[in-house]
Length: 157
Image (cartoon, rainbow, N blue to C red):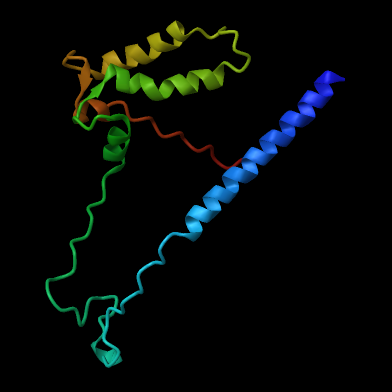
């Protein structure tokens, strides 16, 4: 009986504390200053013909900003693994995203697929790609690790 009463009292206290906190947040936001009024970019008397359009005609000042260069698929893949942006991929950077993949494979958590067995395969792949043996992959070395495209089976009609 005491547990029931103690539970009900603690639930009421938590609900009251939550309401007190909620009201405190609401009053803080209500007393915030209003946003500054928006200023129009074009004077109200500007005719529509003088407003620049999407291809840049009518712009005053410099030319349009330069187009962003598109990175190749290999550059994107390299940059995903190069976490510290030093243009080198260390063994640690290669192994980091694979830890989550290992945990996904070990559904029941009994470690029947040991990490050492899995890491040996990844480490051997890294050693194979690291042609100069310095423990880092350069961009050309990394390009050798590109996954092979799966061949599409022909139609079985």
